[in-house]
Length: 232
Image (cartoon, rainbow, N blue to C red; front, side, top):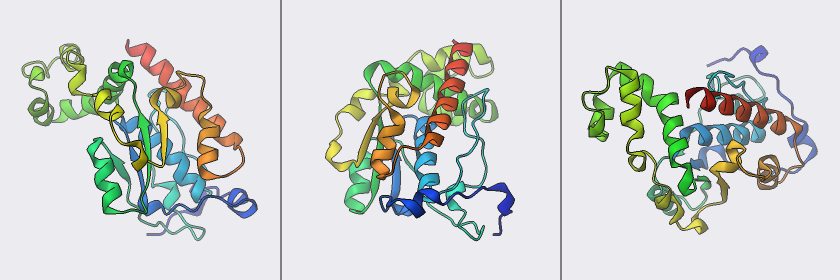
């Protein structure tokens, strides 16, 4: 599949000038209870490894604007297929590691008080539309939604009424982190603590600090703070 090269601005300065950590993107896995943050960090790593510009952020929702995976466009503009691997359950980490010792696993780790925020993000970035389209899957997982899905307000209240079934931080906190190459706190991704996400990722990639990361991360955090405040 040929991709219009004008859609992507390729900047090879990072990989040309510095020795970046060698990461096989086919073996890259992002683990965590929130696809929203996992996908965000995954995009930074994938784009960096392939020296492709970072995607745009939807300022209304904080979601990365969909397009062919920019990390899959090589220097000739040809789209390469990579496994877009997100691990949604903590037990998948050990399974993935035992199945492939060369896997690179990054885990976005929640704290106990992150559960409600993660559930709210999951509802508004995925489940709300899914339920409107076909509520049967959600109802089969969470019986508390039965009879509530036709009313958006009642549905959200029901969804948030039992947060532990949507996100269980304790199950993530008990994993063996020796099976993980990098652990990043959920609060760090969202800008809810003082840790430097840009520096954490740059250290992991073994590259100098990238100002593009700072800008991208700030856009993501600002959009999400505004978005989450609006729906509170």
